Image (tube, rainbow, N blue to C red):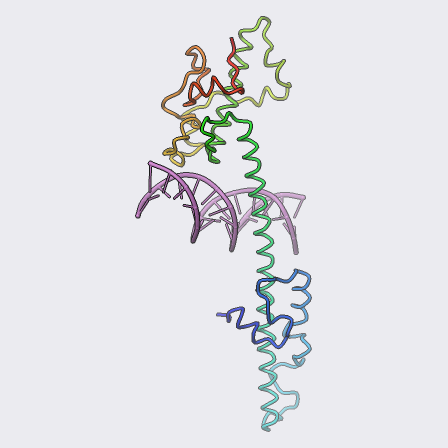
Length: 236
DNA sequence: TAGGCCATCTGGTCCT
DNA sequence: AGGACCAGATGGCCTA
């Protein structure tokens, strides 16, 4: 069990490494100092290991003292090496944490952008992440169905082709399947949330958007919301 | 107070 | 080797 880092650093006779645990070194600094402090190559450690340079010399008290001093130096070098290795790992971990934090911030920004183009609720309640994804799925589906029905109703058809670029047509989803959605979206995570119904394809009470046509149904979405949001333009 | 949601940290894995 | 991505763990905050 290695000694705590603070203890290790306090034992070091290197003044520059004996303080400031909060300000971690750069990788370059760490690598350089790790190389300098390696037990086998450090300037304070003799090239020979274990056995005295002169056979039989360790019998004298002076030789024994020197041997003890060499051991102490090797011990300090090892401790310093471990501390710096710990510091190197720590600095890399801190960098990785920073990147991960930034990545999640970007992900949240994308979710906010997605929320901004979805119909908002009257009380300005912010959708949770899972609700946003579910709601977006349903919303896209509802819009696609609107286009499809518009296609059927317009003379000569072609509403979808006129309103969407060709590459979009194959991407449009089919109607949400409650069975498959139960698996793909998971269950129970937002089941108890008051906002889970609008975002859940598996909602029990669907609001039928339009003239009772199930293709217009938007699961759980309040009727007045649909009628007031500019994103929903009923097809006549 | 329990449960849900979220942010953050962390170690593992994969990719460039 | 370093970065991106992922999933698990943890703790804080909020609400019913």
